[in-house]
Image (cartoon, rainbow, N blue to C red; front, side):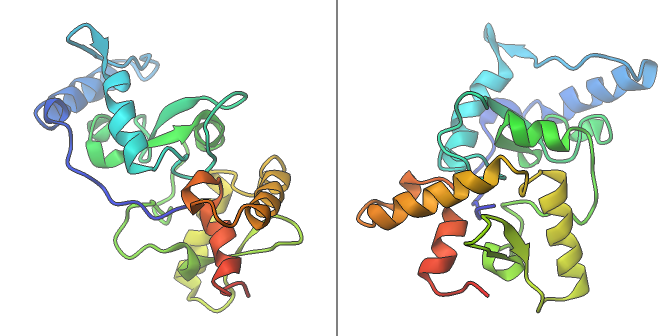
Length: 204
């Protein structure tokens, strides 16, 4: 999971997110089975307005697994970090939204743990929590960090399925391609932190 810097909320969202969140909360209060639908603004669904700035923030990579490009069998979507079923007032809050592949989103679904790491949270850095295993393609939790940090790291790996078997050969393939194309900018590759950790000599 790559560190991100959060930009300012789009103007249309900054002025509407609280109103829309309260309306969604009211819908759920009346009927917990209420179906989620993205609102429309200026004849366009709001998720389509949000995808470009969220993709830019994530460097066109999935905010959680760091896959790039996000293309079939995965598809581009927007992740509610704090689930909209549990935190309805935050359903439209800019700081709660991330560009994501639908595989990561589907793995996490509406699950939530307060220890979960966000890519733009203050003080987060991949190397402070994780290290790569270049024999398996897994992301491992650092053994030399506090119990609290280990819990956050394990929670993040589990809820987003970051060590799901589909990721492991893809990470190893990316490592092989990176070795052959070292002149390329790192942002042209998926799994950037996994690759960079070895280049910086920080693998444990």
